[in-house]
Image (cartoon, rainbow over the protein chains, first blue to last red):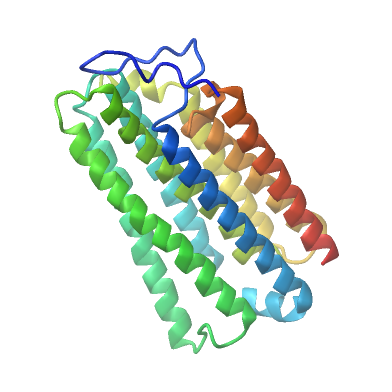
Length: 203
Length: 89
């Protein structure tokens, strides 16, 4: 695996040539990202395994979810990802000024996702639908809860990115972390992209 | 805005629009309950979407082949596994 270009000696904006292959962000973050993606792949398969044992129950339970929540949350995360891409792009070009508000926009989308999730959980609990209700709701809470935990870490990553972007310049190492945390946020988006149809739409 | 304008006019913004449209398509397909083909289409759309996120948002299309291939294998393997489990488990 070629790890070139992150050793550019530039002290200000790390202008990384697009003509060469390069690892986006810190290399180590990809171990973490692929590890998380693998764990989630196992949970997705577990969900379908238990669904296969009682399809009728899972279909009936799924109809008690409101897919509109999942839809809005997906649109929020996709938009937050675009904000992060734009922020990384501006910082890469050495212009930091637009990046903090863009990261703030991404953070706002993440917060809105969390608020919607709390509203959704509350409505389900009020309707008596808890993890104890059945296997579907147990998996629904575990999978969405695990995802939300990753989103909360992602909000921390965005906070780091916000303060990094406010610096007048980033060295190569700092930009590596900045970009790497951006990739982590995209992973949070990516996992939800699979979770949403699996829990709310596939029946 | 002078810095953002060229960034907004890139393929990444077009990909974002495509992802938003694909999300609405999946959601509308999900409202018509029932057919396995619909469910599989929703799964395929989801994995096409994550492939776009990897390639364009995470910038894996410019990454070393090993990292890019790992991601492509992940997308294909998980999609095939989940589709098979949906149909046969």
